[in-house]
Length: 220
Ligand code: SAH
Image (tube, rainbow, N blue to C red):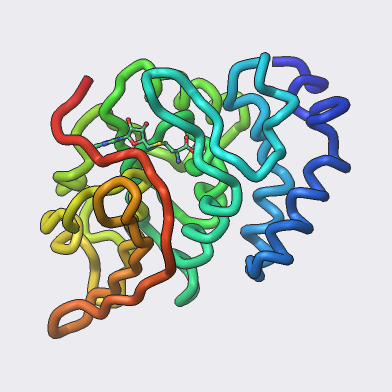
C-alpha cells in the first residue's frame, strides 16, 4: 500500500478526520488516547474503495458477508469504557470484522487477542493490521462466544456483536477487576453493558441503547 493511500487525500484527509474527532468530543468521548487513535487510524483502508469517501462519517458501513464496520462513536465509546479503570494488559476482542476496532484498540493495550467467525473477514483484517505495522495482535478463526481459554484470564473483553444473553464463558475468563463491554439483547432492543468482575460476583452498568449485528454461534 502506498503512503498516499494510507495518509488519505480529499475526503479521507487529516482535516476530515479532525472533524470526526471534534464531533466525538462533543458527544462526550473524553479519553485523549482514544481520540488520538480515531484521528490516526486510516478508517478508509478498512472499507471498499468505493465507500472510502464516507469513511470518516460517523456511521456504520458494509464490509461484506452481511457485516458492517462499527460506527466510530461506538468504537470510541466501547474502547473508553473498556480502559476506564486504567491500563489493560491483556484484552480479548470478539468479532474482529474488518479489523478497524482492533486497530484502534491494539496500541492502547499490551496484548490483544481477537476472534472472528467469518474466515475471509479475519484474513483481510490480519492483512490490514500488518500493513499498519500493528504487531501485538493474535488472530483466531472461531466462535468467540466461547472466549479464548488458553490466554485467559483477561483484563478486558470487548464484544462487537450482540448476544441475547451474556455468554457465561466470557465472564469466567475475566480477571478479578476485569471488564466486559458487550451489547446485549435482540435487534431493536439492545443495550451496551459493562460488567466488572468482583471477588464476589459481577457489577453491571448500563451504557445506553445501541444497534449491533447479532453474535452468532459456530463459524463460517
Ligand atoms: N468492530 C468490527 C465490527 C464487526 S461487526 C469492525 O470494526 O469491523 C461484528 C463481527 O462479529 C462480524 O464480523 C461477525 O462476523 C462477528 N461475529 C458474530 N458472531 C461471532 C462469534 N460468535 N464469534 C466471533 N465473531 C462473531
